[in-house]
Length: 269
Image 1 (spheres, helix red, strand yellow):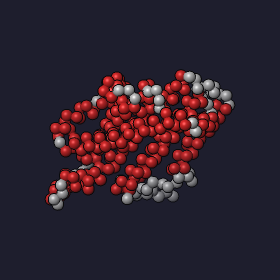
Image 2 (image 1 turned 120 degrees about the vertical axis):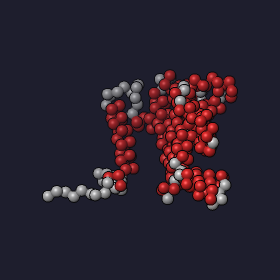
Image 3 (image 1 turned 90 degrees about the vertical axis):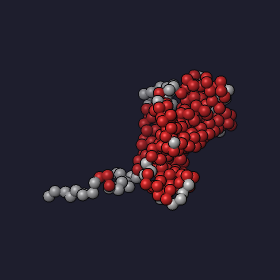
Image 4 (image 1 turned 120 degrees about the horizontal axis):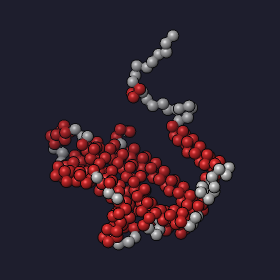
């Protein structure tokens, strides 16, 4: 007796709510917890020197101690968070505006496209001396470079979203007497929002990476500098505690941004 096969193609079938009795979010938790347990057991067994890797329990304890240190909160954590938030907002707004200008005017698109295509081949960190000359030392050069690192992905994704809107929709809006501002707010921006949201998620990741990397090399404050200083000082516990804080910060930022953007995505309504 042959088993029945569904006539519905696999890509049209609804995603299973449970896999091996667990929901997908629970599997994510199981994977993370399992990884932490494995690391804990490896270090506790002595297979890896505690000088190279500390137990997860020690990382968590150190992270809580750091969060209770006012100097760390103000000089390192808060400073990095402000840089990341300011850079992300600047890159998001500038990226959508530049993408709209490229979509609206062909000359702008032709002039900027070659630079966008080769942007990530340019060593961003090498531009820091130029930024210091222009903006001086401190947070401003790092914000400028972090914004530049994340803005391109917003531009490219937003431009893809704008290009995906059919021309017939624009003609229909023109027939209805909609101006450019109305068309942008009510039709173009909502229609392109799924692609813009994808670009914003990547921009958040790039902002975190760029800000911490530049603090690691070029700054005297911030989470990146704290990790670098702990590494150079052989303060292994502090280093891994700060790394755990960075991981939690990135996770919270990603979850919060995803939930916010899901409310703006018309496909989820």
